[in-house]
Image (cartoon, rainbow, N blue to C red; front, side, top):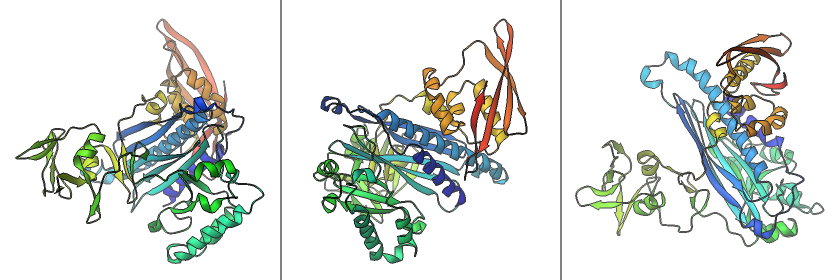
Length: 480
C-alpha cells in the first residue's frame, strides 16, 4: 500500500512542475487542421518486471512539444519507480521456488483516451502499477489544451472569475456524494472542499469530468471517483469560448480505437461477466484475416476458434482456455481476452470502455528505448554510481532521469542534440572511480582511452540530495 501511494505522489510531483504553458502564440485555422494524436508504445519484459506504456504523441499546435515533454518525464519516472521495486523484489524472490521467480511481480500498464470539443483537445492516461500484494494501484493523469491558442488549461482558467462557479460545482459534487454515502469516506466532502477548486479534470465532449484518486474519497473497491457535469449546467459559469465548443460535442463511445471513439460501434454482449465481441470485425480492425474451416471452425493467425468450445488454439497449437466462442446469427463472438491472451494484441475492457490499440506508427525514439532501463536511486551513493555508469555507457536518458527537474530542464536541449547518446566514439570511458566526499557531494574520476592509448582523466563533482517526501535521491548539481 505504502509503495503504491508513493507512486501516486511521484506522478503528482511531475504534474505540479508544469501546471500551465505560458508565452505560446496562436496558430492559424489552417495549422489547426494538422493537429495529430499518434500512438507510441514502450514495452519491455525483464524477469519479474513487465512494462507496457501506450501513450499519445501530439503535434500540429504550439504547446504540443511541452505536453510531449511532460508525458516523457512521467513515463520515465513511472519506469524508474517500477524498476526500483523490481530491485527490491529481486532480493525477496531468491527464497521462492524457481517456477515462481519469473512471475510479473512488478508491472506497469498504461493506456489513454482522448476526445475533442472544437479546438479543445482533452486526454487522460490510465496507469495501473502492481508491486506485489493483493492488488495494484490505478492513477489517472489528464491534460486539456486549446489547440488553436496553445493554452493548457488549469481547472479555474476555464471559468469566468466573477461567477460563483466554485460554489455551484462544489454543491454538485457534494450532492453526488450524498446520493451514495455508503460508497464514500465520512470525510469525503471535507477532502473535496480542501481542494479549493484546484480539481483534476478532463473534458469528454459536452461533459466536464472531475476526478479524485483511489483512496482520496472512498475505499479501494470504490475505485476512482468521477463526477461528470454536462456543459449545459455550466452556462454562464464557463468562459464563452469553452462553453460554445463543449455544448455540441459528443462524449466518447464505448468502443475506442487508438484512444478515441471508433466510427463503427459493433454489437457486443456479456456472458457470466465476460464481454463477448465479434471475432471477424475485431480481427479486421487489428489487421487479421479470418477464414473458415468446416472441421476446425474460424481460422486466424495460424490458429482456430470453434463454436461452443472453450479451448482456443494458437499458431503453435498451444491451447488456451477461455469462455466458449458463440455463433449468434452469422456472427461468431469470442471473449475480449481472446485477443489479448491468444493473439497478444493491445485489447482491453474495464467494464466501461472497450479499447483497441493498433500497431504504433511512431518509430521508437532513443528516449523510449533507453528509458526502459532507468531506475530510481534509493541512496545518494547509488545515485552517483548510476550516473557514472550511464556516462560510461553513453546513456543520456539515464543521466537525465537521475537529475532534478531544474537540471533536467537545463540539460534537455543538449541531450536532444546528441539524440540522447552522450560522448563520442573516441575517446571513450574505460573505468571510473566514485568518491563520497561526506558532504552530499561525490567526486567521479573518469579514465579515458583512444585507439592509440590512454587519454587524460576528467573529474565531475555531483551534488546529490534526497527528494522531499520521497524515498529516492536525485542529482541537484553538476560541476565539471
